Image (tube, rainbow, N blue to C red):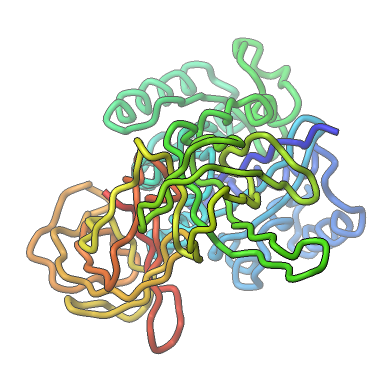
Length: 416
């Protein structure tokens, strides 16, 4: 049986652009809603006095969100079609929830950016597109929504497309597609609209089902952070010693020569196990157990790589940081740092600049970071980390910072 591919995508847009309605429409038209859920939404819509079913209520889970009609938290939704499985991160549009968007976008293959056809590009369009570019999301679909409110005008659509292309030329995103939709009425979402015969492109659902994501992972640089050492100590598996983890990059094959970092010992792969099966090769993002031909001391936090292709190693790390905690942070603050499967202590040594997310200007001379701030910083760790730049590998190039006293995740970082 062929496993369905999983596409993770995030939605972003200004407040009231219709993100939650669009997700509700995707769930509704792809038959991913239970009857009792739909009935509850119908009742809520009637109580609000609407003469239509408000599909946004399917995703706005918090009571305060429903009352205000906005998205505050990151709401994850799951649905599938015969071609693919989908995980949606419905992220908030407000500037004070930038951290929530960073959280939702950090694992996404694709970003859906909604633009209200009546308003065109607004401040949040620029901000969300920049964050998507900063987080190296490889694919963007720009949904020009509420086309029904501009009489399905081709000129309006084409002007927004031209404006967005002019702006996005400064971003590091290679794949951008555009689709005119009406989430409320379902035009070009799952089913093709007969109201826009001038649009010859694909529907949104067809784009989501066919976007090529196999090459999004780094299949060149072999990286296997060891998560767990498996020693069953049973009669059948008395001498078994395997290393469990998720392939973060490259391709590992039976018989390949590998180097164990940070010790530098070189050995070969004896076997690769996927559950109960033996397989000949493993690649990102597969979770497997690897056995080695030599009895080398390997523990959690170590990394298998190719001898001629090693990750960077340093205690001084340069990164873009998103501060997520209500309490501000100052220089010399200490944290627990979690990077791949390794946990070390670290200290904030330098804030090079803070980024104004609206103007993209660099503000220097900053000594404190507040919630939702994005900044370029330097941290020093108690032990060397094995890393790649975030641009090269999103798994080995990212980390989280944890408060030592409260165990809260206070920041996420992308290694430069």
